[in-house]
Amino acid sequence: MKKVLFIWGLALTVLIQLSSCSDNESIAAEDFKCVFDALDWGKGTTYVIGHKSPDTDAVCSAITYAYLMRALGYRCEARVAGELNNETKMVLNRFGIEIPKVLDNAEGERIIMTDHSELQHAISGMDKAKILQIIDHHALGSAVTAAPLYCRIMPIGSSCSVVYTSFKDYGVTIGKDMAGLMMSALLSDTNNMTSTTTSALDSIMYEELLPLTGIADAESYYQEMADSLASYTGMTDDEIFFSDYKDYSAESVGSEIGIAVVNSLDESAQVNLRNRMVRFMPTALEKRKRKMVFAMIINKTNDYTDIIYYGEGAKQAAEEAFGKSNTDYIRCKGQLTRKNDFVPAISKALKD
Image (cartoon, rainbow, N blue to C red):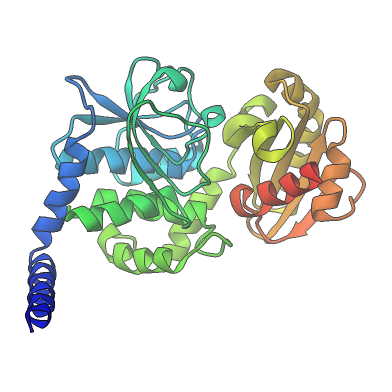
């Protein structure tokens, strides 16, 4: 009998605790804040920053997550890891957000990394920084910390999708500007919700944020973003190739390689960009000290991707991963993503 009473008493206690949590969302938010309070914030500013060759998701995740941390009472500021592409500039201008300052060395700083956790993708000195948090949607990289950190990595369409879940969990209101930045990053990273990386959570985020952004026509807005992204007027081959570029180590993919992403809107631009990047790739190989370099030339209007390659064994690896070449490039159906499509396939080819 005593045993039965004990079990009923325990069950009642659990039910009361669960009921109190569900009835008071502020308790959950406060619990999260206690976790953040345990981090070593120091007395200065913590910088929130995305990866090198920053894209819209890297920049917008840094800005929106810094906003969230400030709303929770922490001294955080967004920074960028270099020159922004035209799409990101257009997005920030659309929602009245100033371009954050550039931070080119993290040594000695307190840092929150967004949209990356791989040191090869980070600014200089990240291995000597105090990394407090990682907010990402990629595989866990090589960043190592001496003290425990807060890490939120999810297999979804964008890092801003991870930030969105954080706003929801911590009970912070999402205003028009933050909604606009997160929505823009989602559209950019998922190719307007068509990418293989798009998840059910991304769809929920899309439906919730769109009314908050003031965007009347999401399709037209995405087209404006795509037009801006593919606008390379006045840019050198070097600037185009490295505008969306990442290095990968032999430990992670099987060889020291670099992968660039370039965008076009029509066949004429596709041919022009493909030829320019082919000519530039020997310079890129030497400049980045890679064994191989690859580029995905993505036609965002006609929905295909041309893969070009340079370096010893690069053609063989690319053909094993994506099929036979058409002279000096491989054409693939759809707009391939570096994360879900290119890196896994080329990594398998290189390791095999």
